[in-house]
Amino acid sequence: MNVHSCQSKIVIGCDEAGKGPVLGPMVIAAVRAPQDALPATVGDSKAIPHDKRQSIATELRQIKCVTTTVEQVTTDRIDLSDTNLNVLVVQSQARAVERLLSGSESVLIDASDVKTERVVTRFQQHIHRNIDSRNITALHRADQTEAIVGAASIMAKVHREDVMAKLAKKYEEWGPIGSGYPNDPQTRSFLIRYVRATDELPACARGSWSTAEDILTQVRQSTLSEF
Image (cartoon, rainbow, N blue to C red; front, top):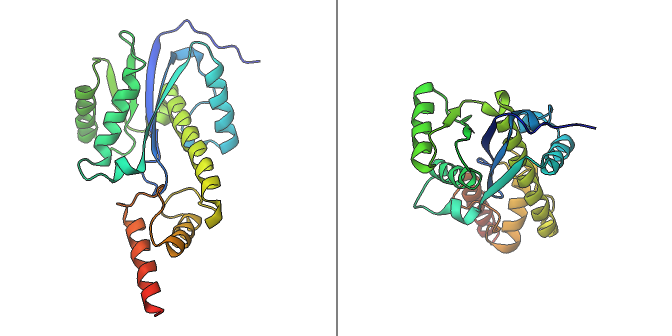
């Protein structure tokens, strides 16, 4: 039986899952916990098998001094032309973190998509403008080096996987939907089947993604050529 201490300094970690898929929402999770309360197995969710991620997420929910919150950015919000995905990430991170802030906790945010130190600094400044806290640090690949961010990475990934499982049942008539990522053959095949049957994209698709636009055009042109 694992025993988790709740006596050390409290920190908040934040990370996202599902920034790049053509299907399903983007999910941002924040986790607030004492540094020594987290399971030793937390880490980058992409490097942890599905069943283990689910197990860790369950364990995190059961630790009394660990609090989690999730922000879900739907496909229709992602498709709006009045903003961009990076802005949506920062805004959602701010909302998730602010719901957990209760004092002067240190906040660690993953900036894995940010490639240079100069851009990381600019990203952190943008975060500061959206979150009312002075103790914020944006780190490149923080989900691999900071346990609290790894915990947030797992919670975000598990939440998105749960959403995708529900979508798979909803759209089972058109076959497996896959992971939702553009390079997944199952995802592309699902979109082709759905568009052929309905002449439109499913509501779970990000219509502004080039993958969705290309498949919609491809199927419609193929249908016209049959006449």
